[in-house]
Image (cartoon, rainbow, N blue to C red; front, side, top):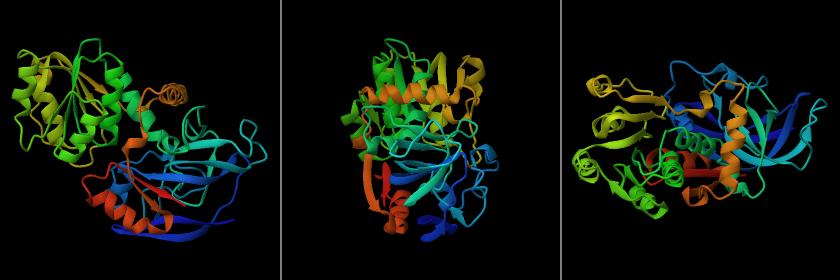
Length: 336
């Protein structure tokens, strides 16, 4: 069948084209309800390719997603309209969300039901289609919060108040953090963080972040710091405000070379953790996806206020422009 799909023809050239879909025996055809523009999508649209791309994320029916032209999208929700002959765990009418690069910025997309821990996942009862369209990044951010090592009474610093940082902030609050301090250079995102439950917000362009954190902690430093901005400045702030023996959580996909002063990592015995769900081993990734999303469906995290823009699929060029240039764009969505 024919579908429209968002394509990056070359860096900084995002268009909507038509292509044909073919359903495999172990796949499902999904009618897209809504798709999200992720940080990865933005990087790819601007030509910021990582040195290594996980080949396992590529569905058998799609070209490897490390060259142009590139069909876009891996965050979406929708309804199954057809199943392959070998599919038994899904049926027509099931509401699902995508986990994997299956060109989901489209009217329809084809996905395996299970491909090395990727594929489609049934939407938990109680989760809206809007929230489910952000199921993949939500699961990743919830996982990061749950695995950050936060304990009752901790002071937590989250550097980066984008979508992931906003979700992590809510999670660590639920886990018993005494105070959560959000750091970002965009005042509007800090205002949103405050509305979503942050205790203190700081802008490093205006505030002395190190002094503020030390003042709040009796000169001890934060118990846990999570980097969620994707640059060396954010990692350095975490390093500077963490207490002796504290936990440093690394979340973001950092594509640029980083220059850091990391003497404290050794001298102060930091517990350094990688908080990336998507890179869990294949055998336990599906279990963690279900665990994180079930908690979201129960009201653990409020997702929908983080949707800042919704565009028609036909307006994908403008949607990507906004996502890449508007500092207040938290989650930009496309709806067929």
